[in-house]
Length: 287
Image (cartoon, rainbow, N blue to C red):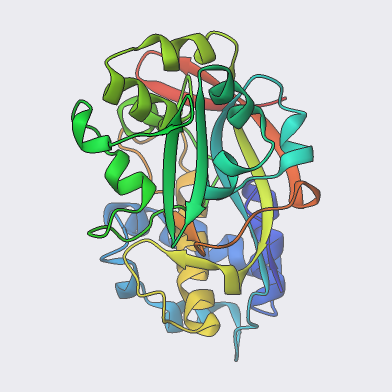
């Protein structure tokens, strides 16, 4: 089964197949219960409280079909968005140690990287950089210091939606790792010079459910439990989609973590959106 999160209509179609019911049954349930769903303010902590069995009974579903693939959405600043189809979306370690646009930019500044013993080693002009002697930054975390969780993985959002600017600012303008290096060296131009050549995009891509972890949940949960959570979140999203413009607070948009050694192939990219900043909100606009 396939959970298509590209928009409201796609979600209705996907849920109908996953629940083995009709789109009209799903819509009837959403319109009948949307106010209660929104009033509950579901998030990663409370989503398990949603009455999934009640939903199944209403739409006539006896057994949920397990989701195999889902579309996710990753924020990325790019000089040329066509590179995403060539490079894909890579873990931080592969981004810095392979022939990517970002790695080429950093090489021009004298930075090179190696991935050794599950850590990223940074060199400048051929010399190993002692991060502890630089300005305070999160490079220890990003490069996999002994006290960290080796957070090299690609992160994404479950739904195409507007974003509050303060929540996504770190992913706009230039890659987050450039901001970290710029902060460590006290040289903002490292990030800003790259940002001047970039636009902000939301990249939608397909991924196997076995390659994802959900914010707030153990990476050990099985694919059927993930399916039930994704169905709950889809119900929540549809309630918001059907009341858009009538509410003033944002929908919770789950963060999805790809497995730490998983790279998204360019062939799995299915749509690209340009991100537009207006006031304190960031909007995806189909490119």
